[in-house]
Every structure is written in C-alpha cells, then in structure tokens.
Image 1 (tube, each protein chain N blue to C red):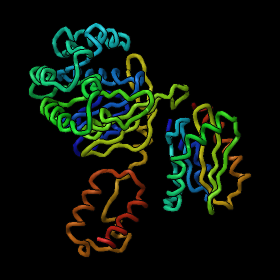
Image 2 (image 1 turned 90 degrees about the vertical axis):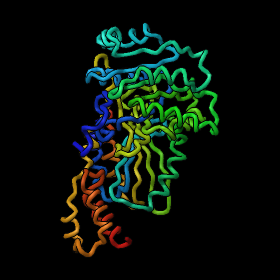
Image 3 (image 1 turned 60 degrees about the horizontal axis):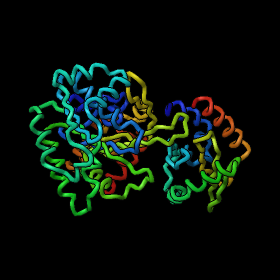
Image 4 (image 1 turned 180 degrees about the vertical axis):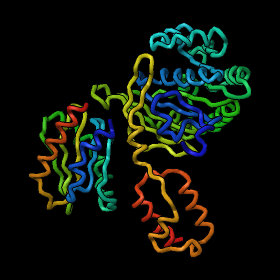
Length: 290
Length: 116
C-alpha cells in the first residue's frame, strides 16, 4: 500500500489499480483510448459499477447508446445489479444527446452532468467523447481544457476516445484530450488470437507513478476486464534504505546538501521500479553532480 | 503470464553474451523486454529496431523465415518467430556462441508456445 492509496479512486478493473499506484487520483479526467471492440464501454461500466458498489453516484453519458442498450450490455456481462442502480436513480444514463445533434462541446451537456453530480463521490463517464470534438482543431484546445476543468469540479471522470481504424493518432480529436487528460490508457486488440491479443498500456498518469509496459487483458462475463501483469510489476519494485546505500557509498549524511537529502528521503518513501543496485548507482551519480 | 514468461527467458538472459531480449508482438509492440546490463550502446540499435520491426516481422511471417539476423559493429540482432503473433529478438555480442544460444532459444520458444 502506498502513502496515498486510501485517497485513490479504484477503477474497478481487476489488476489495473496496482499498475496505477492504487487507482485514479480523485477529481481527474481519465482517458481510455482504443478502436472499436477493445472493450472501452465495458471498462466504463466497470468503473461505474465499482463506484456504485461503494455507494457513490454514477453518471453515464452516451451519444449512441440509450438506457436499453446499456442495460443489454450490462446483462450480457452478468451485471444485473446495474438495472437496480438505474431504477433507484443511483446510476443516471444521459442518452438524450444524440450523436447526429452533437457537433461540439456544449454547455447543455455540461449542465446535465453538473446538475446531477452530488458534492462528493460521483463517477462520470462520457462514452464516447470523440463525437464532441470530431471537428476540433488545435486552436480549440482551450475549450477542451475548460470542459475538463468543469468535469474535475464535478467528480472523477472517465472519457473514452475512438481510435481510428487506420491507427492515425495524430488527429487533434485524439492528441488534445490525450494531452489534457490526467491519465491515458491505450487499449488494443490485434485480432490474431493468442495470449497477447488484447493488451493495454498506460501512456500517462499525471502526478502519480504508473507501470511501464504492455499488459495483457481478457474480457470475462461477470468479472469484466481482467488485467494481468500486476504481480510482475510488484516483483520489480524495491524498497530502498537511503542510509544503507549512503553507508555503502562511503558518504556521510552531513556531507550531502540538505536540499538533496530531502529529495533522497522522498525517493525512499515509496518502492522504486528499479533494482537496488541501479538506484545505488543513480544516487552515487546524483551526489557527484549535485 | 508476464512473470512466467520472464522466468522462461531466464536461461537466455543469464547468458553473458546476451545484452538484451525483447519479445515483440506482430504489430511491433514490445511485450516484454529484459536488459541484462544497462548498456547505453544498444540504445541506438533499439531506436533502429523501433523503425524496422514492423517490416522485419512482416517478412518473417509472410515469407515463413526461420530467423532473421542483422549485424552491427560488434553486436548481432537475431529474430526468431515464436508463434503466430510473437517474435523473440536478441541483441548479442558478435562472439556469442550461436550454437548454444539457438538451442536455448528453441527450448524457450517451445515453453512460450505451451504457455500461450
């Protein structure tokens, strides 16, 4: 458990929180990027379900799925309790925004989200964000920034982005939200079968450690998305003792500037994703050049 | 699975002539990378590989090649298809015992195939 683990928003995706240092940071906008069929909507529903289980409120905004199709998908995954959450009003489905009417980010949608968000513990999903910004140019990034800032005020959000089938990720409708989002997870499905058919990669997690690498996942009825690889990452992390390393290097604490010592102590607060030997080398080099 | 795969690769990783092992997926995504020793000299090769990997994998799979080799100054890059979607890539010293290495690669590939 890391020092701020309790404050993290659990994603609900089995095996993913370990790769995100405990989960999403609260009041953030988190991007899930992937082409059709990778499981973005299942990811989003699983994220909401975890919150609902913890007595948080959920808001699901979709431009192409109505309440009936959300329920159908939830039932196909074996999540019948979703129906109860919708009926009790804990999960709100915003499906009155039709894809053909949505041209760009609009305050009507934002008002819907903000007016239905409670003071704390609300999870918001926009699935998919792509129709809102399909006409986006780089100059309009301030509008996305404004939209994200308002979402952060409302709660912890998850937006999905459609990856074009030709794999071109340079379009502003991808690069702007990826740049402005607090975390980005890229899901991929190569369609050749075998164990690494479906994989995800954490591109960024602002203000937090995240695992580097490509992690296989499966979609299983009942469990939803299950990510493998957390044990591999956990095994790679080492807890270090600064004093021990300084002893080995023959350096006394008092010989190190206090500002650097503070930074080294910060380094030792959490486990580091390197071997002790590598960290000792880095510390030696840092002391030499500080 | 990554942990098991990492363990399977151990006999090759522990060979002192092997500088790096990367398991690539057919689309060029590195699934697992193991660096035996932090060696800045192989960085240039890795950048080169990043640009070539898709073409190289295309040739391996479409021309049914058993392996593919590239020779740089003092290192060899060897690529071995493991399955329909995976390719094992080794960066080794030029004086490595390829006979021993290939025997290890064959055994490792078999174990990975069983695992997936």
